[in-house]
Image (cartoon, rainbow, N blue to C red; front, side, top):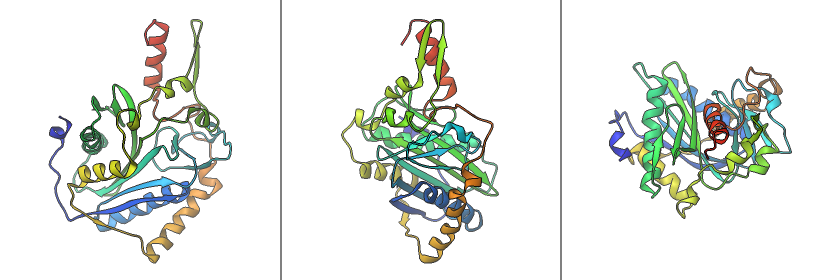
Length: 281
């Protein structure tokens, strides 16, 4: 069982829990940065769940803006690396923001928290859930949840999203440049592969609130206190929102282009291509 892999966590106070709320893309990323900077000085621990007011594309920190096509969806850029993520009502997004006092490697952060999230998914009734090597949680060897992280001083953020419903591939491809490969007479499209990615409701009949509760319990051990932002906090978050709405932040040309959808890594795509070419599936 995955829960047997979970390391015992040092309990330093309660987790502060921010229940799911809908915001625009810039505000969601602003809240993450605000909490990360706060935790660096206060040593608090936050877990938040959130949704998006309208479909949105969140570009990776170094991703080229040219990968964003548009089509009327919201867009911003996050402070963590990786590829573009598609955010709509079909996903549950979450962020874990905590502190550390000793050397804490990125792979250790991923292993600890992805294992807890995977354990929650498994307890909900999904079988063959595995934690990937870098940022993914997989079901039947395909990504169902993807993550990214950032560390500053003595604090880190580990954020990600979990597919609840099937991906709206046609809408995704109208907003993000997806990859295509033409090799040995084959025309292989990432568009088709995304259709095959797993999502929770493919395996179980469940509501987002139930998923949120299961993940919250697994991460915190039910050692949490509900937290709502006050006026002072909201004012500070508003200052970060300006950054995530600014052209200087969003529209920049990074070194990564035509990088596709974050749930389909370049390695996974290449492996799929080779299986098709070699006659596999």
